[in-house]
Image (tube, rainbow, N blue to C red):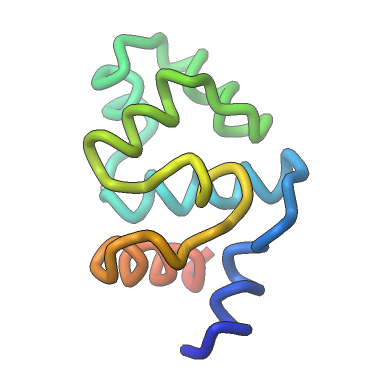
Length: 100
C-alpha cells in the first residue's frame, strides 16, 4: 500500500466528526475489542463510550487509553496522521480501515 492509499484510508487531514469516528472505529477494531470491553477498561458506561465513538468526539481519557495501552496516538485519532505510529500498529489500523 502506498502513501496516497494510506492517506485516503486514514482520511488524513480531515478533522470532521465523521472522519474521527472512522478512525476511532478502526482503532477499536485493530485491537480486537468490543465497545463494552473498551468501556470497562476506561471505567466508562458503555453508553458513554458508544456516544463518544458514534459522534466522533472522543474524550481525553479515551484518547489517552488508546495511546498508552495500544500506541495509537492523538495525531492519528484526531487528524489521521500515521507516519509516527509503529509499523505493527499501522498494519493493524490499515487492516481495520480496509475492512470497514
